[in-house]
Length: 368
View 1: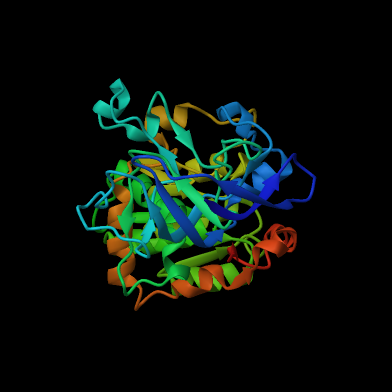
View 2 (view 1 turned 60 degrees about the vertical axis):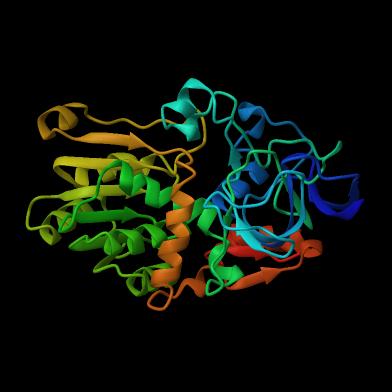
């Protein structure tokens, strides 16, 4: 019997309720994780507001939000002996894992598109009023289903750094892999929140010659520089789309960017980003997850510019293994600890969401 707390989410606009629940047992193939840290991601905020309908993804309320997390193994189900890289697992091993779970046998999984699994399930979509209860990261425990991908966290990578690996970091790594960012290319990152900061760092690590970050919060722009941005553009200083587009052209020798990454999460950013692309430019769309939002654009710019847009939802689970390697190799030069500077106990989750909403912190974290 495993007893612990969950922050039950009943409906948008209603405070979280802390509830103690019990899990009778850990079944074959399952892994019970003792959550050590769970970040508040943008999609958690959207769900909190009701603008990201988990029900549209097959979820039901009440549920437990939270998916960007790290933890240690509390119990191993029968048959589980190693992680997905073959590293032995024991109680106490620190691990991260994709927050979505593929069947590994449908046509999309077999085609290497496990993030589009036809039977996909994920954290935040299970019910919090029936077993196993521990279906999201804002809790003492999280139950990994049988067959889940899981990776051991290197000893040198602390929990505060590892917590962002399974969502923000892996997502932008996958996006830049999808558009095959090359050495010497130029990149514009729209938005310097956690996703944008990771995008800046990964782009530089992949050999981008120039990375330009755009945001309107001075602290985030300062962080973008620390994460490797060659130039930052403050939308408060360069106030119009026309002027920002002109500046990007100037910074890229009149050519426009090879890659633009959108992590603002508002449709209005898309048309602006598309105007910043050069010939054969690739637009990576990650941030807009609210259904029904639209924007206007001139499709001839795609045709005459030989441009493309790539939508990125989730990631191939193996990218998470590469994300851990990235953290292990680059943590000494990147101020990764500043991404989750504010920690809140689970009992204070409502205060944490208020702080995350105010954008006082790049990433607020729940530490049960």
